[in-house]
Amino acid sequence: MKLDQIKSCYIGPHISPEAFIAEHFFIYLLKGKMEGFDGHKSYALWPGQYCMVRKNHLARYNKQKDEGVFEKIVVIFDEAFLKAYQQKHAVSSNTYVSNDVFIHLNKTDLIPQLFLQEEDSTTRERLLTILLKANPGLENILFDFGIPAKIDLEAYMNRNFRFNVAIQRFAYLTGRSLTAFKQDFKRVFNDTPGRWLLQKRLKEAYFLIDKQGQRPSDVYLEVGFEDLSHFSYTFKKLFGFPPTQLRK
Image (cartoon, rainbow, N blue to C red; front, side, top):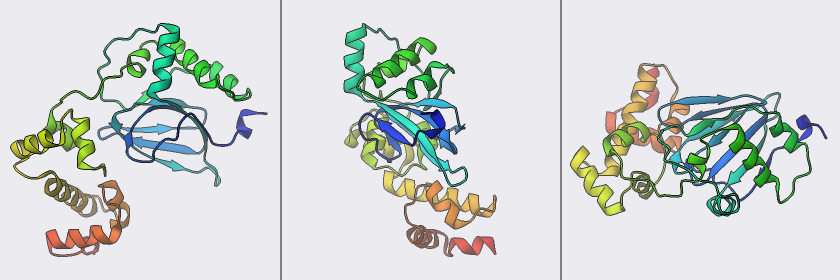
């Protein structure tokens, strides 16, 4: 079988479509295009390219089909697998400091060769061995099993308010209990998380529609709303007119 005949597949546990990345995963794009956004940087992945997406971060990614086709290989490196691999191969690691969620990987011919072979129980282990040898320092990302440390709340929220995740998730990612998160939030922003997020998202939507000429139907998902009608209702409630009026 040729590589361009491989259909989209997942190797490892199921990965959630939620913006929160719960486990590291490797993605190899076969057909189409993928665009990603991690709160402060945009990324693009083209056919034949691959990258690692880091756990315990927020990210948004979308796919663009090529002649109606989007195909990929995704391999999830969950914590249980990584701990077993580390123990088996005696891998050591150091602290990794970066906000990047999509990690560039050095290209090697061993990757496409691996996926031309029949998938079996050793595929993930063989892939990880290839990646670690081709990308010095990757072990510092994959074998960090600690929970998120307490970080600057104001900077984090201003960078990530567009992501539609629960308050509990924001608390975890900023290294706080839910109670501590709410207390710190009140001290930093003088508001509740829910009210601040709503107004911040609506003001961002106003800017995108008014200054950049975007359509409400394109903006509402980008700024963290799930439903266009709810977005329009809350927009009008805050500004006194519907978002469509800005484009007239």
